[in-house]
Image (tube, rainbow, N blue to C red; front, side, top):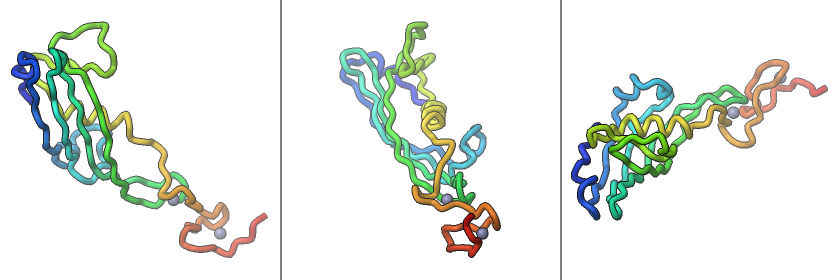
Length: 151
Ligand SMILES: [Zn+2]
Ligand SMILES: [Zn+2]
């Protein structure tokens, strides 16, 4: 969703609450989002404080992971917080937290997707004490011992 935030840039003290979601159909088309199995809920606010416009929001969604040790599929819920300074004038001095909004338009979906892709872990375990697979017979040891003798 594109937010027109010209008013927010121009009025000191102005604020805009955000409560929206990125639908699954859109996530199917975003690279890197294939494992997200729920819409992404986005809640937050944009505030103009003394002429500086900032966005902070929480992004909530569920990811279907493959355990790195036992290869089992499992779902994990995420709730991640992000903060950005919004600017309508691009500058080479801008830091990573600064997001440029050409024509005062904020592409919140694009920003939210790029934010969460940075945070998503690439290697995950279904639980911290996952016992993994037996190196001999390949059985998932979380389901019980396989009877192979340890060397
Ligand atoms: Zn596991
Ligand atoms: Zn075994």
